[in-house]
Image 1 (cartoon, helix red, strand yellow):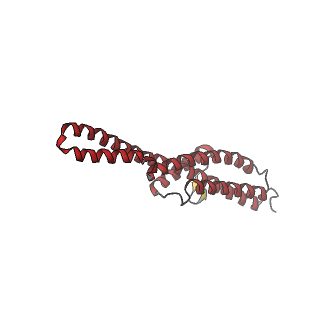
Image 2 (tube, one colour):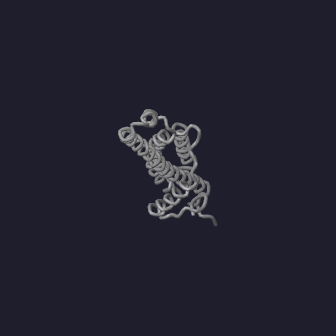
Image 3 (tube, rainbow, N blue to C red):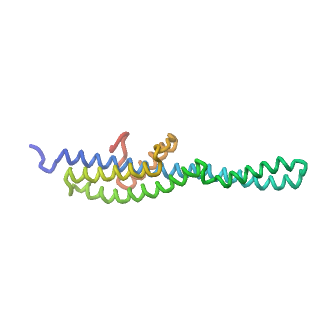
Length: 182
């Protein structure tokens, strides 16, 4: 005899939403890590520019015979400073920072949706409606901030997956299996 409370389609829809929720958390974590990685590059470039500018002025004073060389170095440093907003790392850092905030907000909302879904209060259709809305909002964020696709860094993705697994285990008491819920 079958259990009347067992609804396989509902369990399937719950699992589909759960997996989307986990993927969203992984992406949000990945984008945060990517933003931080790009910030290191932006800061390094800024330090190099500042050192080049400062050492150029000092070098100019000390070795006046090479004033033309120091002038070129100083001009390049000033041009780099003027173009810093157009450097790919700076633009990617800004895009990742903005996207990280959007994804974290979306994740918070999705967690509250998950609590309603988890209790079984919604039908399969209602769950799939929430799933579609979540998937579209995630895709919209990706298209807005990285229209040519989110940059891939396997090392950062592995770190993001690990952090997500730790978060899900601590928050929900669930371990994420390869490709979904354990």
